[in-house]
Image (cartoon, rainbow, N blue to C red; front, side):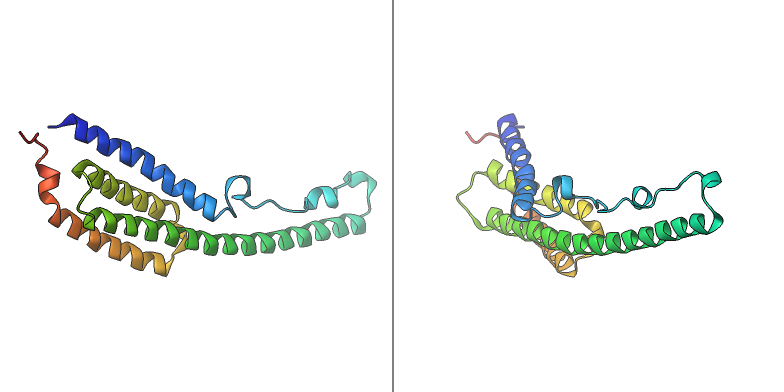
Length: 174
């Protein structure tokens, strides 16, 4: 086994996968970092604080709890809308990642001048990044992403079948 080729493959994969995800976050910056989770705009319990039960009447207590409950229902609705928008946005991000990886897989397959280790690194990197994106964005249920994933699957099968000698024959040429 040629360890140098294996090292080159590993280097390509280790740079390629984070590059893809960082690129996705650069081109699709919404809902990333500190904006990746819902932050309520109002704290219903500080806006309508609960007072000591011995100091308020039954009517005041009921009014406060009803206002808190209504506020909480509005917050829940706002959160559902935010999460729905985030899922749609993440679906676009998944399509971007999957399409980019499919293009790289096609380049690895059809560019004849690349070294075998670079070709294998691009192949493994694109497959690894597609797998990672599929796990990360599974909840988006993107139909376009699914179609791209199916195409990637058949391109991967074609790549393995076409490049099977590269997978197996790693002996130094003399």
